[in-house]
Length: 108
Image (cartoon, rainbow, N blue to C red):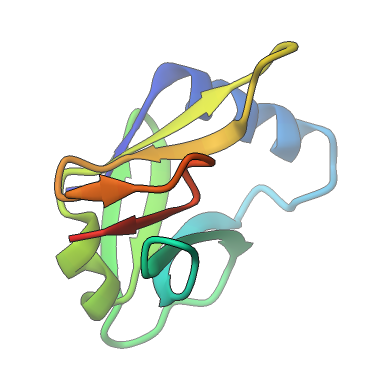
């Protein structure tokens, strides 16, 4: 399962209501090679599911990931932090053994 915090849900709803993203789009998360810790998170809005996608719904938000990324993202929570010191969307990943200072890359 991939989880969505209340703050992340609220921000996603704000983006959709602004008209920048259509209502039928969902969140696609994935893991790519790179970053100072070896692996990086990627998050986009998408509206096309692929045959091997893993599909979840938490807190009223549909989250989709590919099977390979799901191995790294199992039980991860998508968070959002705003304000002066906010980082935007972040991932709270219990599988990460090491993260970089900016929180955008990790290792398992």
